[in-house]
Length: 383
Ligand SMILES: Cc1cc2nc3c(=O)[nH]c(=O)nc-3n(C[C@H](O)[C@H](O)[C@H](O)COP(=O)(O)O)c2cc1C
Ligand SMILES: C=C(O[C@@H]1CC(C(=O)O)=C[C@@H](OP(=O)(O)O)[C@H]1O)C(=O)O
Image (cartoon, rainbow, N blue to C red; front, side, top):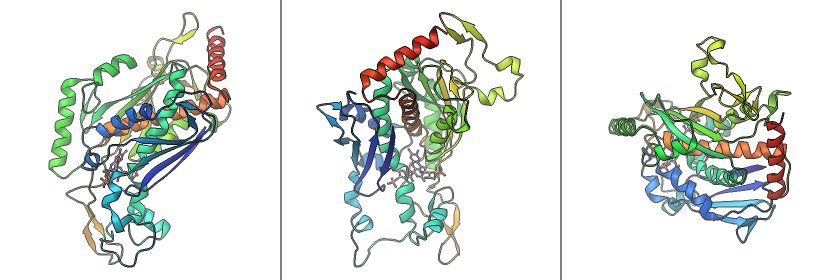
């Protein structure tokens, strides 16, 4: 399974084509729209989220609510496009009546993107580097989640830290996490800390600043033996880490309790093996991976999200033509994207897991995939 996406942030639409989804999967736009809504809701988003109310259109690969096995095309229209007239015109225009962006934001793709592609208007870079693209990635992930759901695999994300406010005690099962974050605007399991996190975001916003944090993404009931130790590029944890790093503003990825484990003795952190109707582990410090393969324990990945680049109290930068010091440009912006990034990463994990499963158990039809995974689970249990 693979996909490509296209679309500029303020252009007419975002598009993705996914290939390799088996035939026979139940899929409706509403199944995807649920996730799109959640991505838009995280506390700390800016005014763009008041304009957009993302809804997917499925324009190929599905008939009567069931996948056909042919490429699936997903489209999300950018409602904001109607406000960008000349700025985003696709056809040549005689004269422009908008500001050319010249002062790059530290931390965004503006400067090096312009240097690489030879652009003298930084908008030519920011339109595609923008995390607006994550809307279509979440739509793709929602399709992957439906494949996983048919295999009884669930994925969720929750926020562990915003700025210096962090949760140290949190449940480890998806159903408990789901219940705990249900009413938290920052998707945090602790209601008191949720309030503190929101306050921290408000403070940053008032000061024209931005704030980052850490999210955790979990998958439950993932069969043992996905990925392989035999070649570096077949290790599934490596593929997941690469995919996580591909999300705007993610600056670090680690599995399970890696941060803690690195400062302890091996005897204190290795997950001891036990047997109870199949092999299992007495703890899950390594986040469900050994040797690049899933070991049957929940997959647990944490991602460090940097504070977003656009600051309403901007840092100094350099004008790309005059080379003079100027305050960096201000684009309308979010102040914290940690909860939203968690939802994006949940989709990314779902896609990587579904892709790996389809590589391991190549199937044109969902019914044969379900049988193959069931058979594999039995073989793992009976080892
Ligand atoms: C959901 C989401 C929303 C974002 N919104 C903004 C934003 O409003 N302003 C901004 O400067 N950066 C925002 N970012 C981060 C930038 O897109 C990102 O920092 C930039 O593309 C450079 O990529 P890098 O941080 O991975 O190096 C957002 C990121 C995510 C995941
Ligand atoms: C549009 C989205 O996020 C955008 C990501 C983004 C950036 O620089 O990454 C900058 C902002 O764009 P705008 O200036 O249009 O408000 C965010 O709103 C979205 O998440 O759907």
